[in-house]
Every structure is written in C-alpha cells, then in structure tokens.
Length: 202
Ligand code: GAR
Image (cartoon, protein in one colour):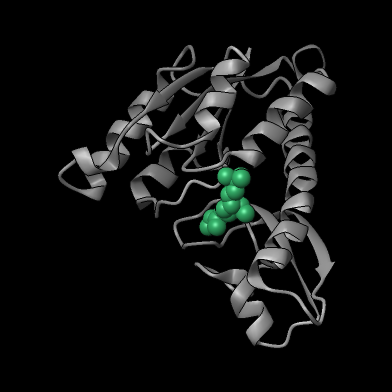
C-alpha cells in the first residue's frame, strides 16, 4: 500500500479535499494508495478533527517543543517515515503546512514531497499572496501545485489554476475563489503522481 502523509497547520480544507477525492476516485483500488496519516505542527489545527472523523491516524508535533528548526524537521521526518514499511511514505503532501523546511528534510523526501501555494508561481512566493496580487494590479491570480525543492515555493510545477481578480476583490474574496480551485488541482496532481508511480514504491 502506498501511504500518503498529509501535513497541515490550520483549517485543512485541501487535506479534506484530498481525502474526499481518494474516496470518490477509489485511489486504493486504482493506485493501491491511501491517506495514511494527517500530521500537524499545531494541536489546534481544525483539520485534525476532520481527519479523525474519517478514521485517519493523526499526530501533532509542536515545533515549539524543539530547540531548533533542524531538530524539529528531523523528528518530523522520522515520524513521517514511521507510517510506512519499509522506511518511506509514497508521498508527503504539504497542505497549508506553514513551516519553512530544512534542506535535509526536503532531500529526504525528494521527488515525493509536494506543496500547494496560493499564487501563480513563480510570482508571489511567501506570504500574503492575494493582497500582493491585488496591490500589483494583477488581472489574474491562482494557485500552483509543485514538487518541493530546497528553495521556498520553488520546484517543478505539477498543476496550476487561474482565476480572475475582480475590481472589488479583497484578499479574502480572492482567497476564497482561489481555494475552490486549489481543491481541484491538488487532487488532480496527486492522482497523476500516483498513476505514474504505480509500481515505483512496492
Ligand atoms: C491554502 O490556501 C494554501 O494554498 C496555503 O494555505 C492555505 C491552507 O488552507 N498555503 C500556503 O500559503 C503555503 N505557503 P487549508 O488549510 O484550508 O488547506
């Protein structure tokens, strides 16, 4: 079984969309894959409740309990790796996981570590993407699913979605429009990765 581990920090709507897509599209039957665990660096992350309600294993690793970024990332990587036999999950999916990851962490899961970012990368890496797109006068905004590399919000692009920026948009209204598309492209990107990886991680 190919185990997918999803990392969240908050609401977890992308994670929930992935869990629903896995069910609806029968990722177990088609790709031998399942969402094995949802992990968070925040105990209060709302998405954890949804994961538990779906019978998915959850874990919390509070980054504040670790002396350094390196120590937290090493513990997180070990905990993630514990979800599979032997050694490694098929995919580690960042879904609103609001932490900058160390090169060592990225290297450990290279090629099977994905992220979704609420902008049309390479534009607007980092935070406050929607406000920045509005202030820049962008007519279009969107979201990007990409493989994670050591550089923040960079890496090979797997999927993108474009939405219009409307004249009366606020960061919140634009974020809501983008988020609807995020749910579609993340599920599509992961399904494609699973499809191409069938047999690659026996
Ligand atoms: C999403 O919009 C995601 O793209 C963004 O956080 C939100 C999480 O929402 N991620 C980043 O900004 C990462 N740099 P969710 O918890 O409801 O999925």
